[in-house]
Length: 265
Image (cartoon, rainbow, N blue to C red; front, side):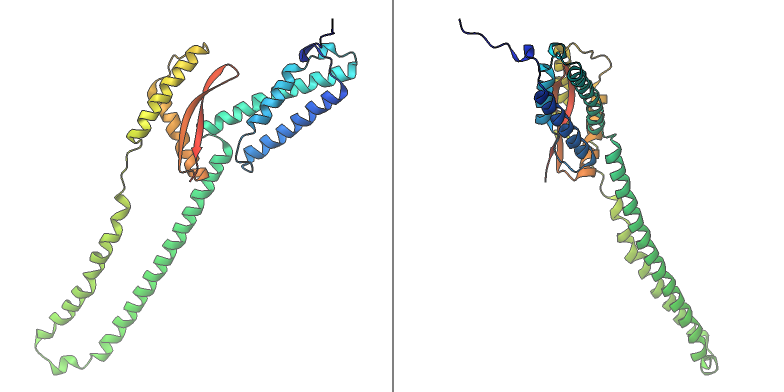
């Protein structure tokens, strides 16, 4: 009878196999770092699955070389530590609490505040110049009109400056009134009806998947889950400029969780 080859998990690993696992693990770690820094746009999920399959096939107990066996166990332990760290960072990104996204929003707000401050300084400078010009004109007019009282003794000339002051002051509030009202006009609801329906569907799917995975659902109200998804959506749109963000439920490592799906412009 022909000899059957043992399955992959029963094969002892060679030095080349351990080197390949180490190279793939280091490559996966570097790509994840670039993804968390914002250089890579997509998560290296396929490369992570490949490394995960290699780790499942690894069996250090079949290796006779002590040094090689220790090296393989060390690589498996490193992968488990990396995986816990990656999962924690991905959860922060989904919830909108990732430090990189928060810093990006803070820088954007500070830049907007600086622009508003510079615009306000320009408006103040224009107002000071206008007041100085009006003050100079007010000092020059009495010198030119000094002989007027001798020529016109009647008090009928008094209404003229009053009319001038009314004409000069009334256009200012009427012209500025429309400019002060538009900022208070937009009053859109926090969550549109279309997103509420989507959140309800995702919420029902989340409860179903958590029940299948034997995870608890106590205290998971729709309002709390919807607020989390809305906060994560607003943060992703503000930080990355996506057109919209939807959500779905995925099962990873036997646990159901929410995953944001960005929609590019």
